[in-house]
Image (cartoon, rainbow, N blue to C red; front, side, top):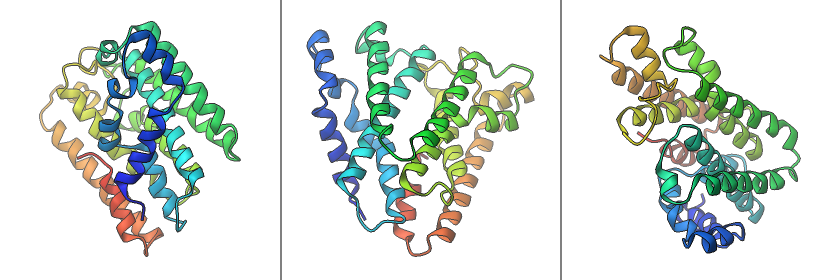
Length: 266
């Protein structure tokens, strides 16, 4: 199995050598890799590492092509994160550069990643997943937890795909589109993020009543009592079901399965 530290170091090194960052570094007088805290982000959660782990479920080794795909996945997800925070009016990025620079950086990261993905055989199907994720992002920005149509079922069907469609895209690239528990993994990941949004005062979830599951349920019930506990239960339930499915589909890959599930935040 690939060593986590080595994989993250390889992806990180590719970002330090990224020509795209040079003009931003020169204009803003920054080191973008350091300013974006990429190394810490990758150690916290790495989409590229998730891809490599899923890839190893059916392959004995990681190739340079796999590492290249992992790098561009990180690039795409970084662009998605910047867009999400711009739309949510979260302020962390504005400490690095102005909103014009951020908008251009998002666009260039997205275009460079898509240029690479367009060379892959699964590009057209993968593009459909990315469009599904953007549709969910639209709903996330333009709807509120207090809207009458909101429910747990609506959340899973319409809001969750901003994460789950990206996981499906990664599974497609890794060759495990049919046997990876993308829904359970995505639900555990997104609900953990939702809970963080309740407590992080820099985020816009509570002030703007974003359609996160805790806020949706809080409005429906008229109370916050027990909501965090319920969301934690759903996270643990999704983790257990996801782990069981992976063990069933890949019985000889127990160490790798634990590594994949270990990527999920608690």
